[in-house]
Image 1 (cartoon, one colour):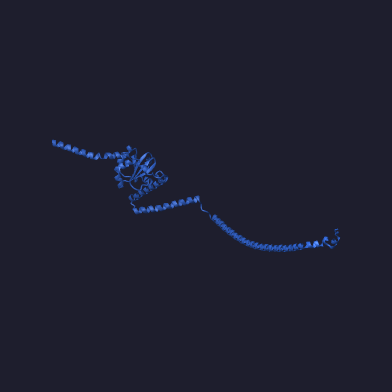
Image 2: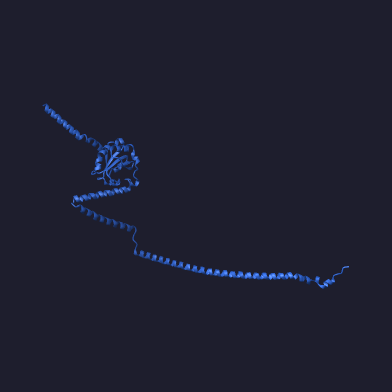
Length: 317
Protein backbone atom coordinates (compact mmCIF):
# COMPACT_ATOMS: atom_id res chain seq x y z
CA UNK A 1 0.00 0.00 0.00
CA UNK A 2 2.81 2.40 0.80
CA UNK A 3 4.44 1.62 -2.51
CA UNK A 4 1.23 2.36 -4.40
CA UNK A 5 0.74 5.67 -2.60
CA UNK A 6 4.31 6.68 -3.33
CA UNK A 7 3.84 5.85 -7.00
CA UNK A 8 0.70 7.96 -7.13
CA UNK A 9 2.49 10.92 -5.56
CA UNK A 10 5.33 10.62 -8.03
CA UNK A 11 2.88 10.46 -10.89
CA UNK A 12 1.11 13.59 -9.62
CA UNK A 13 4.43 15.37 -9.30
CA UNK A 14 5.36 14.49 -12.86
CA UNK A 15 2.01 15.76 -14.11
CA UNK A 16 2.49 18.98 -12.15
CA UNK A 17 5.93 19.61 -13.59
CA UNK A 18 4.69 18.90 -17.10
CA UNK A 19 1.78 21.29 -16.69
CA UNK A 20 4.07 23.99 -15.29
CA UNK A 21 6.52 23.56 -18.15
CA UNK A 22 3.72 23.78 -20.70
CA UNK A 23 1.64 26.69 -19.41
CA UNK A 24 3.90 29.00 -17.40
CA UNK A 25 6.37 29.93 -20.26
CA UNK A 26 3.43 30.85 -22.47
CA UNK A 27 1.94 33.31 -19.98
CA UNK A 28 4.37 36.23 -20.70
CA UNK A 29 3.95 35.71 -24.42
CA UNK A 30 0.17 35.96 -24.12
CA UNK A 31 0.46 39.13 -22.07
CA UNK A 32 3.03 40.64 -24.48
CA UNK A 33 0.95 39.73 -27.51
CA UNK A 34 -2.06 41.48 -26.09
CA UNK A 35 -0.01 44.73 -25.82
CA UNK A 36 0.93 44.74 -29.51
CA UNK A 37 -1.60 46.53 -31.75
CA UNK A 38 -2.10 44.91 -35.14
CA UNK A 39 -2.22 47.70 -37.77
CA UNK A 40 -3.69 47.24 -41.23
CA UNK A 41 -4.59 49.43 -44.19
CA UNK A 42 -7.92 50.15 -42.54
CA UNK A 43 -6.72 51.37 -39.12
CA UNK A 44 -3.13 52.53 -39.76
CA UNK A 45 -4.10 56.16 -39.12
CA UNK A 46 -4.38 55.33 -35.41
CA UNK A 47 -0.65 55.92 -35.20
CA UNK A 48 -1.17 59.60 -36.01
CA UNK A 49 -2.46 60.13 -32.45
CA UNK A 50 0.05 59.96 -29.62
CA UNK A 51 3.44 58.26 -29.65
CA UNK A 52 4.01 54.95 -31.40
CA UNK A 53 6.70 52.40 -32.18
CA UNK A 54 5.67 50.39 -35.26
CA UNK A 55 7.37 47.33 -36.72
CA UNK A 56 6.96 46.21 -40.34
CA UNK A 57 7.51 42.48 -40.66
CA UNK A 58 6.70 39.43 -42.76
CA UNK A 59 6.00 35.90 -41.43
CA UNK A 60 8.60 34.37 -43.78
CA UNK A 61 11.39 36.77 -42.68
CA UNK A 62 14.02 35.08 -40.41
CA UNK A 63 15.17 38.40 -38.90
CA UNK A 64 11.56 39.25 -38.07
CA UNK A 65 11.11 35.90 -36.34
CA UNK A 66 14.20 36.51 -34.20
CA UNK A 67 12.96 40.01 -33.27
CA UNK A 68 9.46 38.83 -32.38
CA UNK A 69 10.08 37.90 -28.68
CA UNK A 70 12.06 41.12 -28.12
CA UNK A 71 9.30 43.19 -29.68
CA UNK A 72 6.63 41.56 -27.54
CA UNK A 73 8.73 42.08 -24.42
CA UNK A 74 9.18 45.72 -25.38
CA UNK A 75 5.42 46.08 -25.84
CA UNK A 76 4.92 45.06 -22.21
CA UNK A 77 6.57 48.41 -21.28
CA UNK A 78 4.13 50.44 -23.36
CA UNK A 79 2.08 51.62 -20.37
CA UNK A 80 5.18 52.60 -18.38
CA UNK A 81 6.63 54.51 -21.35
CA UNK A 82 3.23 56.02 -22.23
CA UNK A 83 3.47 54.82 -25.83
CA UNK A 84 1.75 52.29 -28.06
CA UNK A 85 3.51 49.44 -29.84
CA UNK A 86 2.22 48.22 -33.19
CA UNK A 87 2.95 45.73 -35.95
CA UNK A 88 2.23 45.73 -39.68
CA UNK A 89 2.24 42.52 -41.69
CA UNK A 90 3.26 43.58 -45.19
CA UNK A 91 1.94 40.37 -46.72
CA UNK A 92 -1.61 41.29 -45.72
CA UNK A 93 -1.13 45.09 -45.98
CA UNK A 94 1.13 45.67 -49.02
CA UNK A 95 -0.10 49.21 -49.45
CA UNK A 96 1.47 50.24 -46.14
CA UNK A 97 4.84 48.88 -47.22
CA UNK A 98 4.68 51.18 -50.24
CA UNK A 99 3.37 54.10 -48.22
CA UNK A 100 6.28 53.82 -45.74
CA UNK A 101 8.84 52.77 -48.40
CA UNK A 102 9.81 49.57 -46.61
CA UNK A 103 12.89 48.24 -48.40
CA UNK A 104 14.24 45.95 -45.66
CA UNK A 105 12.72 43.75 -42.99
CA UNK A 106 12.17 44.30 -40.18
CA UNK A 107 11.73 48.09 -40.37
CA UNK A 108 10.83 50.11 -37.26
CA UNK A 109 9.29 53.60 -37.27
CA UNK A 110 8.84 56.04 -34.41
CA UNK A 111 5.71 58.15 -34.85
CA UNK A 112 4.79 61.14 -32.71
CA UNK A 113 2.22 63.83 -33.49
CA UNK A 114 2.21 62.93 -37.19
CA UNK A 115 6.01 63.03 -37.55
CA UNK A 116 7.69 59.87 -38.81
CA UNK A 117 11.26 58.84 -37.96
CA UNK A 118 12.92 55.58 -38.89
CA UNK A 119 14.59 53.77 -36.00
CA UNK A 120 18.11 52.60 -36.86
CA UNK A 121 19.44 51.62 -33.43
CA UNK A 122 20.06 48.29 -31.79
CA UNK A 123 17.27 45.71 -31.81
CA UNK A 124 17.36 44.74 -28.12
CA UNK A 125 14.81 45.63 -25.45
CA UNK A 126 17.03 47.96 -23.43
CA UNK A 127 17.98 50.01 -26.51
CA UNK A 128 14.34 50.35 -27.52
CA UNK A 129 13.35 51.45 -24.01
CA UNK A 130 16.19 54.00 -23.75
CA UNK A 131 15.25 55.34 -27.20
CA UNK A 132 11.89 56.39 -25.72
CA UNK A 133 12.94 57.25 -22.15
CA UNK A 134 15.92 59.40 -23.15
CA UNK A 135 14.07 60.92 -26.12
CA UNK A 136 16.80 59.86 -28.51
CA UNK A 137 14.32 60.12 -31.34
CA UNK A 138 14.89 63.92 -31.26
CA UNK A 139 18.37 63.31 -32.70
CA UNK A 140 16.83 61.93 -35.89
CA UNK A 141 15.35 64.21 -38.54
CA UNK A 142 11.72 63.43 -39.41
CA UNK A 143 10.72 62.46 -42.90
CA UNK A 144 10.14 65.46 -45.23
CA UNK A 145 6.61 66.43 -46.11
CA UNK A 146 6.79 65.07 -49.67
CA UNK A 147 7.95 61.70 -48.30
CA UNK A 148 5.47 61.55 -45.45
CA UNK A 149 3.13 58.51 -45.49
CA UNK A 150 0.17 60.90 -45.20
CA UNK A 151 1.05 62.76 -48.43
CA UNK A 152 -0.90 62.38 -51.67
CA UNK A 153 1.97 60.96 -53.72
CA UNK A 154 2.70 58.27 -51.15
CA UNK A 155 -0.95 57.30 -51.32
CA UNK A 156 -0.55 56.75 -55.07
CA UNK A 157 2.47 54.53 -54.43
CA UNK A 158 0.43 52.58 -51.88
CA UNK A 159 -2.24 51.93 -54.52
CA UNK A 160 0.39 50.62 -56.92
CA UNK A 161 1.60 48.21 -54.24
CA UNK A 162 -2.00 47.06 -53.71
CA UNK A 163 -2.33 46.46 -57.45
CA UNK A 164 0.84 44.39 -57.45
CA UNK A 165 -0.56 42.25 -54.63
CA UNK A 166 -3.79 41.73 -56.57
CA UNK A 167 -1.86 40.64 -59.65
CA UNK A 168 0.20 38.28 -57.54
CA UNK A 169 -2.96 36.70 -56.14
CA UNK A 170 -4.37 36.37 -59.64
CA UNK A 171 -1.16 34.67 -60.77
CA UNK A 172 -1.41 32.10 -57.98
CA UNK A 173 -5.09 31.49 -58.73
CA UNK A 174 -4.34 30.85 -62.41
CA UNK A 175 -1.69 28.28 -61.53
CA UNK A 176 -3.44 26.55 -58.63
CA UNK A 177 -7.11 26.72 -59.64
CA UNK A 178 -6.93 26.47 -63.44
CA UNK A 179 -3.66 24.56 -63.71
CA UNK A 180 -2.03 27.06 -66.06
CA UNK A 181 1.79 26.88 -66.01
CA UNK A 182 3.78 29.85 -64.85
CA UNK A 183 4.98 30.77 -68.36
CA UNK A 184 1.35 30.70 -69.60
CA UNK A 185 0.37 33.07 -66.81
CA UNK A 186 3.21 35.41 -67.78
CA UNK A 187 2.07 35.35 -71.44
CA UNK A 188 -1.47 36.23 -70.41
CA UNK A 189 -0.18 39.12 -68.29
CA UNK A 190 1.99 40.39 -71.18
CA UNK A 191 -0.88 40.29 -73.69
CA UNK A 192 -3.28 41.94 -71.25
CA UNK A 193 -0.69 44.63 -70.52
CA UNK A 194 -0.34 45.39 -74.24
CA UNK A 195 -4.11 45.54 -74.71
CA UNK A 196 -4.66 47.75 -71.68
CA UNK A 197 -1.80 50.05 -72.78
CA UNK A 198 -3.31 50.36 -76.27
CA UNK A 199 -6.74 51.19 -74.85
CA UNK A 200 -5.30 53.77 -72.45
CA UNK A 201 -3.28 55.33 -75.29
CA UNK A 202 -6.39 55.55 -77.46
CA UNK A 203 -8.33 57.18 -74.64
CA UNK A 204 -5.50 59.67 -74.09
CA UNK A 205 -5.40 60.56 -77.81
CA UNK A 206 -9.17 61.09 -77.82
CA UNK A 207 -8.94 63.39 -74.81
CA UNK A 208 -6.14 65.41 -76.45
CA UNK A 209 -8.11 65.68 -79.70
CA UNK A 210 -11.14 66.84 -77.76
CA UNK A 211 -9.33 69.67 -76.02
CA UNK A 212 -6.92 70.45 -78.90
CA UNK A 213 -8.72 69.47 -82.13
CA UNK A 214 -6.57 68.90 -85.23
CA UNK A 215 -6.45 71.62 -87.89
CA UNK A 216 -8.40 71.12 -91.13
CA UNK A 217 -6.89 71.22 -94.62
CA UNK A 218 -8.38 74.66 -95.27
CA UNK A 219 -6.70 76.13 -92.26
CA UNK A 220 -3.45 74.40 -93.23
CA UNK A 221 -3.66 75.80 -96.81
CA UNK A 222 -4.50 79.22 -95.40
CA UNK A 223 -1.52 79.05 -93.10
CA UNK A 224 0.68 78.00 -96.03
CA UNK A 225 -0.53 80.98 -98.05
CA UNK A 226 0.07 83.29 -95.13
CA UNK A 227 3.56 81.92 -94.72
CA UNK A 228 4.21 82.36 -98.45
CA UNK A 229 2.89 85.92 -98.31
CA UNK A 230 5.02 86.61 -95.30
CA UNK A 231 8.10 85.26 -97.07
CA UNK A 232 7.32 87.29 -100.21
CA UNK A 233 6.84 90.42 -98.12
CA UNK A 234 10.11 89.75 -96.40
CA UNK A 235 11.86 89.33 -99.76
CA UNK A 236 10.29 92.55 -101.03
CA UNK A 237 11.33 94.41 -97.92
CA UNK A 238 14.86 93.06 -98.32
CA UNK A 239 14.95 94.23 -101.97
CA UNK A 240 13.66 97.66 -100.93
CA UNK A 241 16.35 97.88 -98.32
CA UNK A 242 18.99 96.96 -100.91
CA UNK A 243 17.65 99.62 -103.33
CA UNK A 244 17.58 102.23 -100.61
CA UNK A 245 21.15 101.43 -99.66
CA UNK A 246 22.29 101.68 -103.29
CA UNK A 247 20.50 105.05 -103.69
CA UNK A 248 22.07 106.29 -100.52
CA UNK A 249 25.48 105.27 -101.78
CA UNK A 250 24.85 107.05 -105.09
CA UNK A 251 23.60 110.17 -103.37
CA UNK A 252 26.55 110.15 -101.06
CA UNK A 253 28.86 109.89 -104.11
CA UNK A 254 27.20 112.86 -105.88
CA UNK A 255 27.27 114.86 -102.67
CA UNK A 256 31.00 114.30 -102.32
CA UNK A 257 31.57 115.36 -105.97
CA UNK A 258 29.53 118.52 -105.45
CA UNK A 259 31.37 119.26 -102.26
CA UNK A 260 34.71 118.91 -104.02
CA UNK A 261 33.50 121.15 -106.86
CA UNK A 262 32.27 123.77 -104.40
CA UNK A 263 35.56 123.68 -102.54
CA UNK A 264 37.44 124.25 -105.82
CA UNK A 265 35.18 127.20 -106.69
CA UNK A 266 35.74 128.66 -103.24
CA UNK A 267 39.48 128.35 -103.73
CA UNK A 268 39.27 130.14 -107.10
CA UNK A 269 37.16 132.92 -105.61
CA UNK A 270 39.59 133.34 -102.73
CA UNK A 271 42.52 133.54 -105.14
CA UNK A 272 40.75 136.09 -107.39
CA UNK A 273 39.77 138.22 -104.40
CA UNK A 274 43.38 138.12 -103.20
CA UNK A 275 44.58 139.30 -106.59
CA UNK A 276 42.13 142.21 -106.61
CA UNK A 277 43.21 143.21 -103.14
CA UNK A 278 46.83 143.17 -104.21
CA UNK A 279 46.05 145.30 -107.27
CA UNK A 280 44.11 147.83 -105.23
CA UNK A 281 46.92 147.90 -102.71
CA UNK A 282 49.41 148.71 -105.54
CA UNK A 283 47.25 151.59 -106.94
CA UNK A 284 46.91 153.19 -103.53
CA UNK A 285 50.68 153.23 -103.05
CA UNK A 286 51.20 155.07 -106.38
CA UNK A 287 48.60 157.71 -105.57
CA UNK A 288 50.25 158.26 -102.20
CA UNK A 289 53.62 158.95 -103.82
CA UNK A 290 52.03 161.43 -106.22
CA UNK A 291 50.33 163.20 -103.39
CA UNK A 292 53.63 163.52 -101.56
CA UNK A 293 55.15 165.33 -104.57
CA UNK A 294 52.16 167.62 -105.35
CA UNK A 295 52.37 169.92 -102.27
CA UNK A 296 55.63 171.48 -103.52
CA UNK A 297 54.25 172.16 -106.90
CA UNK A 298 51.13 173.61 -105.41
CA UNK A 299 53.14 175.87 -103.19
CA UNK A 300 55.18 177.05 -106.15
CA UNK A 301 52.07 177.60 -108.20
CA UNK A 302 50.29 179.56 -105.48
CA UNK A 303 49.83 183.44 -105.97
CA UNK A 304 52.05 184.24 -103.01
CA UNK A 305 55.05 182.75 -104.69
CA UNK A 306 54.34 184.19 -108.16
CA UNK A 307 56.66 187.01 -109.51
CA UNK A 308 53.81 189.46 -109.59
CA UNK A 309 53.16 188.99 -105.93
CA UNK A 310 56.79 189.59 -105.20
CA UNK A 311 56.68 192.91 -106.98
CA UNK A 312 53.60 194.09 -105.20
CA UNK A 313 55.12 193.82 -101.74
CA UNK A 314 55.68 197.22 -100.12
CA UNK A 315 59.14 198.43 -99.50
CA UNK A 316 60.27 199.05 -96.04
CA UNK A 317 61.62 202.44 -95.20
